Image (cartoon, rainbow, N blue to C red; front, side):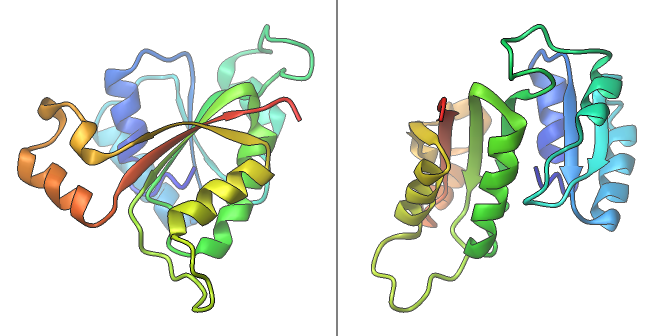
Length: 183
């Protein structure tokens, strides 16, 4: 969700075996840039790019057409995704509920929602909780349970230099991993 330049989807395609990747964004110009970057990086045929605004659900016919058929999952899970990645999308905390609405309607039960987060969004002045507490609380209201929180210092050394990890840690970057519960 929020593919932007497509970098997260390109990385998934290059380094993680998958059957299907659907990159989405609500901006037509971002989608055009994403398409060009995917072409320039020779992504595999299992990558599809579609317009999707947060708060909406990717139509199942798009999933069926791109995936080549129905999923063999449990009843109620046909055509839904195993994992959704939202990388660096919280510029406006008010958008989080729309992101969660889309994720909830697009994920299978027990599916995974991964949010790679760099704090940038403004929090209402009267709010005394941290942004991360608000993000976690809202996700729980939408039926997601927090599986893990990954901090930059926990990342493997080959993925970032020490200075990069320290910088990301200092600015409060974090990766949240949630599971969609049954309700």
